[in-house]
Length: 306
Picture 1: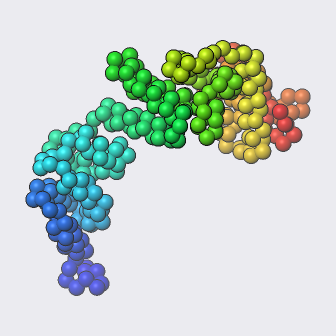
Picture 2: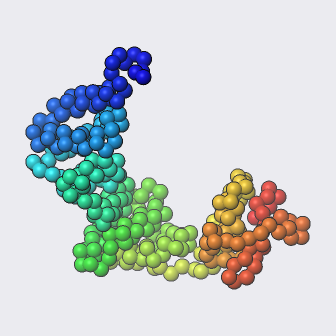
Picture 3: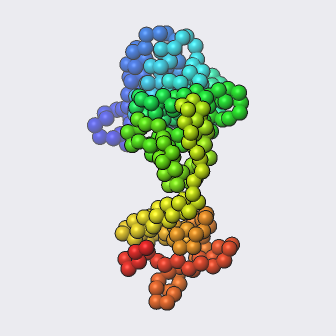
């Protein structure tokens, strides 16, 4: 039966006509004949893969892809050129034309190249996030040093990014406006509050000592680190008490943090926790089984303020 209002034209015929009209309008927007040819090929492929209805509705989102093709020399764009233009996130939004390129012209995505490009973009964003000044100059110099190590094959791009991230964290401790170099006091504060970043920051400290005639020492008092860790865990527990939740993820996070605070457990895999509810001396809590033994931690109740 023909839908009302369509006369003699069926719905699929109507969408096919609409799709062809949109193709005709858009193909004329391209100046170069090779772009018009590629766009026409893509549209035929698109209709064959998803039908005229979906193809007509989605065609507009793929136009930026062919606008870029129009801007490059005659030929099929390489994966690296597409990656440089759209970046990794943009490439993911262009999965359909990328599939067409793969099927029709053998242009394959390269996951290693995509990851490398993403790392470089993150590094550039990190550098640009620090305002011009002495701290930015030090960070840029450190990047140059790390880049020389990368060229020599003695480090990886990911390690470069992580090292620069640790360096920026140290600079942020030295000055919230990121306009000062660290002093021994701010370095000690940083290492005390974030002991896990010691290895990451060590390279930057060595660089500052060489390039800026600093005399910064990495030594930090273990007791101070332990005290800072306790304070941090205490704040996390207090925050959870003020905003309790009965969900499994919340309970596991609470137990993990409580084990670290009350029993000095160094590391806890909250996903692997085995525990039961247990009332001890009239207080609600949990009995937790670890490889090192059984531990009891209190439940997150309003009466408990650590």
